Every structure is written in C-alpha cells, then in structure tokens.
Image (cartoon, rainbow, N blue to C red):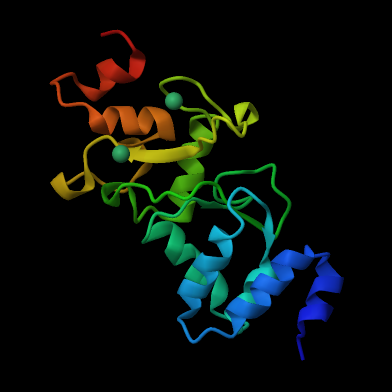
Length: 188
Ligand SMILES: [Zn+2]
Ligand SMILES: [Zn+2]
C-alpha cells in the first residue's frame, strides 16, 4: 500500500507538500481536478510523477490526464520531452498559473517538441529563453498558431511559432492591421 510517509520518504517530498497531497488525495473530485490542484499548489516547482500518481490515487491514467491538462486545457505543464529538455526524467513543472489561449491548444506533444527544438527554445520575437527566467519576470514559452486554428490553421509545425508569454500577450492585444510576420521580425 502506498502511504503518505512511504512516498515522502522515498522521493524526499517536502513535508508541507506531503500534507497537501494527502488532503487532496481524499477529495471526491475527478483525477484531473486533483492533479491540477496539486500542480497549482506547486507553481514553478518540480513535482515528481510519483507525487502525481499519489494525488491521482490511481496508477495508470494519471499521465494521460496530465497530458490532457496541457493539450486540451492549455496549462503550461512541462517535462523533459515537452518543452524543457534540461529537466530530469519524471519531473513535471507547472510553469505559470495561466492557460494558453484556446486557439493555441490541442497541439500534440510530438509537434510541440519539434517546434520548440526548431526554434531553439527561444521566443522568436525577443529571443527570451528559459535561462533568463527570474522571479520578477516569470514568463515561459508558448506556441502560437500563425493562422488561427478556427480559421483553418493547421496544428502542424509550419503553422506554429514559439513565443514567450509577454510577446504572445502583446500580439493578441494588438488591434491594428500589422501582419504577424512584420511584427515578429520587429521591422515595422
Ligand atoms: Zn496565440
Ligand atoms: Zn518574447
């Protein structure tokens, strides 16, 4: 049987995180909601797959539920294979308490990985990358559909571009007629 103390001992979970995890685990809510709650208690901090499995209280579906939170709901939950290659295997980080815009969701992990790698894990407008992260400027990288998904834009690498959240917000707040390509290269 998995118990709070055996999990905590095995993976060195912080005591407070352990108490929160134990409380969450017993809430009569969906696995997806419990996983999201736990990640939101740990924004910006590494969480192990074992912690997530413990909170999910089940052994097989939790990883799929985490992928759904990322792909369908747009939560920036990164792993080694979905955006942050420097992370150890089995570590998950909710980078920020923010969901990507609905039209920038539903991107498969494989395509996400290809686009980030192609773009050198850098914002294609301002060149921000994760090495520049700091607490007073907690941005992260998102993928933006050049042609919006709902107007026929495909979920393929050639229709996607890596932007930091600051530039992404700036583009979506624009109400003028500048084209994306001109804005992106800063040559307006
Ligand atoms: Zn976008
Ligand atoms: Zn940027």
